[in-house]
Image (tube, rainbow, N blue to C red):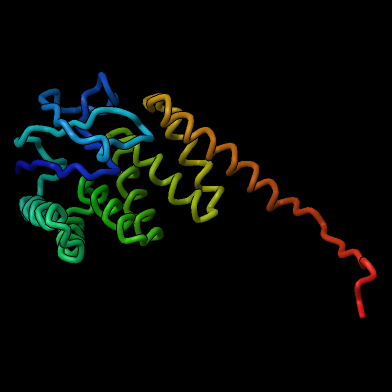
Length: 201
């Protein structure tokens, strides 16, 4: 089955040019010119989109059909319908990498962070190298929810691939340091002793 993946303003497609993001598994790409508003500042790279004709990772025709329907609904910002189709796609093929990735993105947009984490974790458990920014997205969700132990794990994995731009690397390293500091502070809290300043009546 064939598809044309949507490009969201916070995401890269995982078929990007290896020269830019080292994630490509289809060398045939086209450069899409977006306004500066659509540039993802964390990575600071040009957006790419694969040409129509990219093979999906699934071999299930039913899963692919559901995914394509979900993709269309997602492009139309019909998130509830997109979610239903992506769920169908993963029901037909639990190892459908692309469906899990877009489901994670969809849940992030809906601010359903726990569900987004589950979806992204499913994706990277299927293939940890197909789309390494998924580890960055996982780290970000976990960091803002104070799930520091998991954030440390995923930022560390992301940085180990050495594919981030200068800004992306700096952001991940900063959040990694903060997560380690916060986790250590939680383990050894500073005792608080109230002091009577003589203001009691």
